[in-house]
Length: 320
Image 1 (cartoon, rainbow, N blue to C red):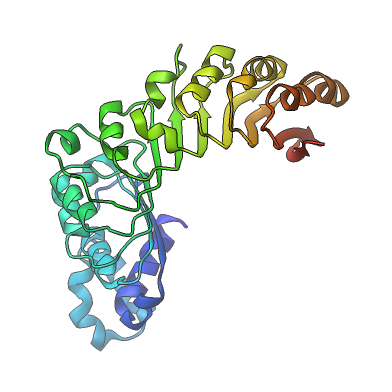
Image 2: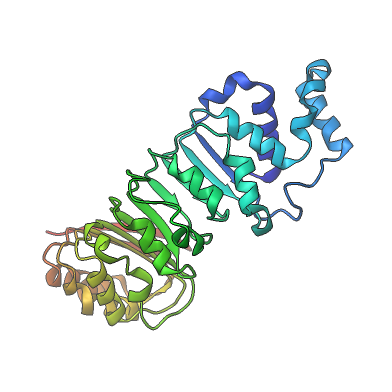
């Protein structure tokens, strides 16, 4: 949803409050706007909203909500008592700790899934400590050492957290702090630059032994057999591995077949790429896919992309 449509939705939600309990999921993508969420709304824009709502008398007491996008969003979030999924992505300057307090400090919902670019500091810690139903946390770019040094998520908080997303730019000691003593079963890691070793970006300590699903998005054209082996070592109980590269070619498959024997529990391997480059489809099956099943005795499914008529389709291969 565009920024304009999002704002219109929030305005309607705040104006017709009776609809708020029926909203279970909300996505706010203000990270690409050119102005801060505290910028005052123009008189013309306010009049447009007033005209759209069609009730000038009732609107008089509603003007404070439309001061700026901060007051609008804070009012809407406070109304959403049954919200379960929230994606809140703001500009870096809008994600400061004091804004976290203003936007989330008075909410009462219990989220199941939360993704944000906002700063992880005292106010975010206070918010998360009350999220006892949270199962998935996406914090690909906003974790800081403050959450660790201030012990903002002590033992016993986030008791149901089982899915977490992080990126290679984040300090791994902070990621380990969040995953420690929590029932993590699925991880998604964004590897944003080419690196010689993956292990330092994946090491979440003892909790890695309970991880069943691993998704890696690697911003590179190549991967080595040693790096694939590092994934297997870091997540020995992984039953599903998804890997997305910039390019998927024969060299990539060669590295996979040379290292897939390291996985002792893997049942599903899902490969994807922005570009898929091969010679002949028949050779692909004979030289690589069959070898994967032969070398990894637990592998049952291999999901593979194929370019057909300028589009990418996914084929599912099953062990015979």
